[in-house]
Image (cartoon, rainbow, N blue to C red; front, side):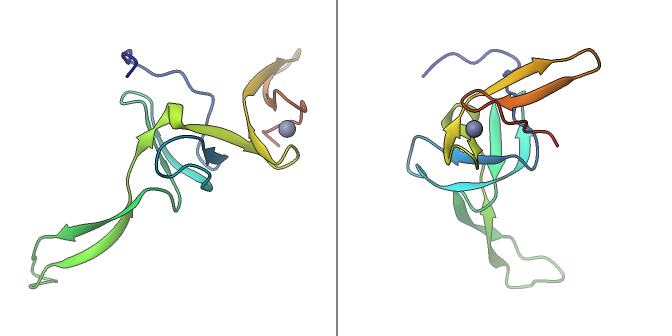
Length: 112
Ligand SMILES: [Zn+2]
């Protein structure tokens, strides 16, 4: 394990398409639902789903099981470029007015 600094640098944002490139979820693709830079973790739609038991409450006196996406480490995912059809790295293209995220392999703009 690498030591994790206070804040993990990532160019990924919510709603980006990503592919998991290591661990038990390897090869799975999904949309980013949440990025936690402090913890270096990311929640990806449909990836790392686990059952969670909800304790009984007034509405659910029996308690119940729900399926939730659990966070995975940011370093385990890559941006999925639909032009390259694979996980790629994100680059930054700086123009006069703005910074745009691009696919490092094909230079396709990520932010439309
Ligand atoms: Zn690409």
